[in-house]
Amino acid sequence: MPILEAQALTKTFRRPDKDSGFKGAVRHLMQRKYKNYTAVDGIDLSIEAGESVAYVGPNGAGKSTTVKLLTGILRPSEGTVRVMGRDPHVERIANAHDIGVLFGQRTQLWWDLPVEESLKLLKHMYGVSDADYKRRIERFDELLDLNEFMPALARTLSLGQRMRADLACALIHDPKMVYLDEPTIGLDISVKDRLRAFLRELVNDGTTLLLTSHDLADIEEVCERIVVIDKGAVAYDGSIERLKAHYITTKAVNLYLEGAANVPELAEKFPDYEWTAGEAPSEVVVTYESNRFTTAEVLGSLTAQLSPRDLSLSEPSIEDVIRRLYAGELTK
Amino acid sequence: MADTQTPAIAVPVRHVFAIYWRTWFAQIRSIVEYPADLWVMASAGAVWNILQFAFLAVLFANVPDVAGWGYHEMLLLSGLLSVAGGCNALFWDGAWSTGAMVIKGDIDYRITRPAPVIIQVGSSHIGMQSIGEVVFGVAMMVYGWIGAGIGFAAIPIGVLAIACAAVIQSALVTALCAVNFWIKGQASIFAFLMIELQGNAMKMPLGIFPIAVRLVAMFIVPVAFINFVPVAVVTGHMSAWWLAGIPAAVVGSVLLAAGVYRLGLRAYDSAGH
Ligand SMILES: Nc1ncnc2c1ncn2[C@@H]1O[C@H](COP(=O)(O)OP(=O)(O)O)[C@@H](O)[C@H]1O
Ligand SMILES: [Mg+2]
Image (cartoon, rainbow over all chains, first blue to last red; front, side, top):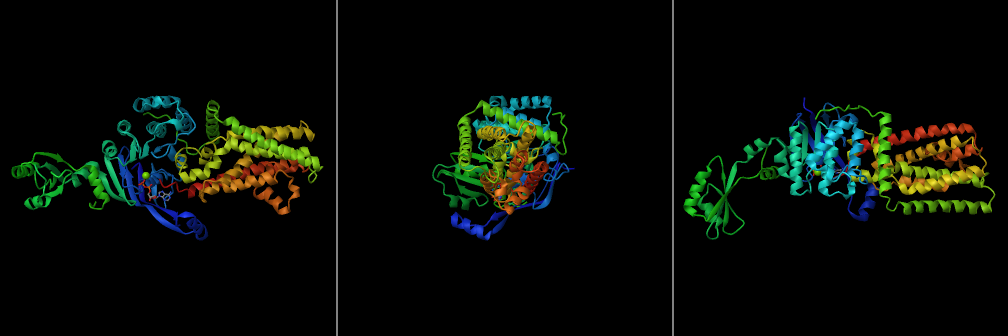
């Protein structure tokens, strides 16, 4: 049985339909008009224990709303969620012991308390034993350097410290199912790397993870499966490997010519490839389908006829693929 | 990681109390360590109380009694009301942030934790500046108590009345603040309205008001049981039977607050960011 199962999950928000400004607000008070906005539109999602799932999509796609539905914060307008067989909204207390949640944009630390106090309050709330608490804090400290800011008041932490502390809060009770909504947002590279290493370890230990992120490096390094959503609906659901194999069907060569490149002329000369201008006037990008031509063939014909000064090879990143998925250029 | 914790299905009442007090003490410790402008604020609260004291002194210098109530009895009314309001701030100030938390989506994390949301919100802040209100309120009560010649035997009733007043006051404030689950806004207008009306009306004997007002204050929004009823009983203006109404008001107002909060959480939509 999957650890998490969502069926036809839908959330419709009611938004006040008002013009901006004071006049609009007054008119809204009189008329009370609302518009419905469907942020999550019939999502089916099933996650097996131990899976690590990346949940990606453009801004406003409905990622955070989905996480709130899956964690029981919001009541679905339609559809159902089961986490370990429970409805997380109805049985929220029992569910709370099994899940860990982090919203990168917000903190769950008590603002005026030292970090350590927040962790202790949570320890007590979740009923974590002293021995387990000690062991987990030691481990978090190894990986996240918690002790560096344990006595500091939450409101004095840097963003990176705050996120590390929040991660410890989300995991202090060793939850089986963990939801991380933008855990690396706004962090600098070194903290990001650290966090990713920590998450990889978490996944290796068997924790089930759902992670939303804008940063595709997070996804490639931590997750095996990717769910792409757009406008509240699933656009792709499958392994990252399959996504690459299926959609990364083109490769590209960057050529640096002696003089300025004449793109239309080149396109006419080599109609099998796609030609686009590069960043410099002497640079061109040649894209070809990797199942029709080998790289050797392509390079052979190009170098023989154009004798470029230099060249480099590139493969489209998963980022490009996902961007094209959003844009509706690719289908499931 | 091996696991030794036992998942609870519902939260036992004792655990809820423990969570509340731990959160409260953690914040007190922090306030004591970083007192900042605490004393300035506490003094402001105290000055407000001295003004009340002065008002009553001036009033009774000119009139012998108000609807049969003397100076010291009126001090008891004012004092108990101050203590109730002050205790609300000291022990349950977080309830006032309900509206702000709803708008900002700060209820989110609290829903994902294994403890009642209302407890987590109520204990989320301590209005330490109100310590002055409590201290002066108690001083007014002691002075009024002695002046009215009530005697030592009734002191336990007085202490219980203070505890019940704090609970009823906090519960009614919570229920009214929870209206902001539906009416989105930072300000808890209904709760403000209630304490404003209390501040004006409940420092007077209830008897001077029309019957409709009296009925509302007793049975609809039972603010009368916060200060008026206990004081009227210990001063002999009402029969002791009315004391039974106080625990009833405690239970009723707590259930009301819990119920409104529960409904509010069902309607909670988080925030769009
Ligand atoms: N509480 C809310 N009330 C009204 N609209 C909301 C609310 N939460 C989210 N939305 C809207 O739903 C859409 C999806 O939001 P969200 O799930 O936060 O997107 P994402 O996390 O993918 O960026 C957005 O258009 C957002 O404005
Ligand atoms: Mg989001």
